[in-house]
Length: 215
Length: 303
Image (cartoon, rainbow over all chains, first blue to last red; front, side):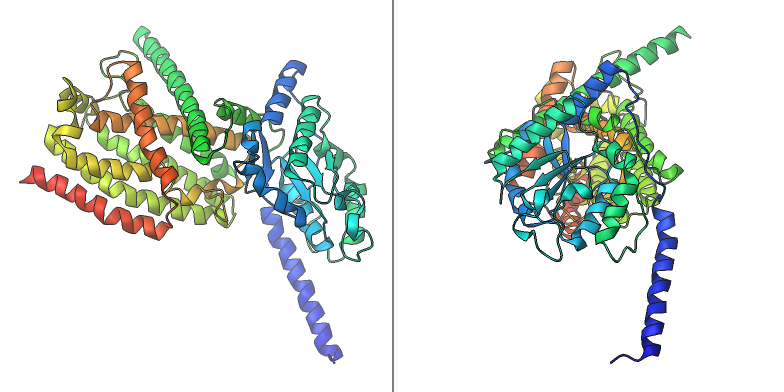
């Protein structure tokens, strides 16, 4: 049994750590609320830009759940997505597509949100597997979220458990269509409904020891 | 005044040519590497689409002035290096700003962009950036040792430090090339070339498969676009430099294209065959055989 004094001092220590962390965060991250950025270029140029965005999709190398096992085969000789202009990127700063692969536990969701916020506008999210749609086989789990688009704006869902790499490629093609039509505005949607998303996120993430927004 | 304007026009045309050549070269190399892997590979115009995509990003985050200047220094290093090397021997507009003693400046300019990039990446405060910078700089420093020795050997052989004069001395057929007249220096130079082109087995510091992607971890949007553009300049400038030093230079654009393409293929094929070295392995490798060959190359001309 822990004595009250020890408990108190530990809690104080934890508080101190969080406070000092916030101080350091201020140097590294911008905690300002994101703003919706409308396309600056004219209609024709924007269409051209959308075409470039669609034909150069950089996928963040962050496997968030069991479904991430379906992603590496995409880059191998059998499926070879590079022929569609799809490449892996190791850092969220440079990535433009985030594949939430399978179930997202609350602990991972925290990392997902931080990575997503560090990506630059325009950015796209793909939900891979049934778990991201309605919880799938983990629908009654105490530790996973059931519906991904309560927490992040999702552009394309790929149903199945597990969807094969072919299904993933079909999802990429759908995403490309959306981008070319100018309908994949997830980053702006996130900025416009920021408070709603944050409230949902904070409802499930109990130990919120990070800035509200960090990019 | 008119002269300056004409020179400016030539410079811009020269830069335009080399930029597109570099981009196409990178596109084709991606395709060739993919074929070696048994894949179809991205279309050859993919590097253009990638640059366009990075430039079309709507937001970007800065970490300070040096962070801004990092890619600018990198690009300055690439363009500066190219402009000091005569791309085509005897051509008016592709002669660039080559002058006597430019070899020393060229060796300096190869490093210039990297140092600027190191400062910029350092300001991003990402722990992976300095790790990548440290790995990259130590690897490049090691690969420059045999290169410097090869250059000293060439300078002793031709009694000049001007690249144009070195190319002029090699005219008149394959038997006049440094490759034939000074094979030892060529061997040292070509081994160091593998390290300078930053392809496998010497690409640990920028490999995406490593924990960090290296110095550009925090670079994104148009910053990254600038750096990708620089790759086209930097790669083709180094190819042209080695072509001029060891393989007789070029007297026309097609000859330049063929020679630099074959030179690039040398490092690409070494890259697809040999797996990546760790940094300490690579440094040890450079400081053993290639350095000894370089010392031998100087020794031959010193005696």
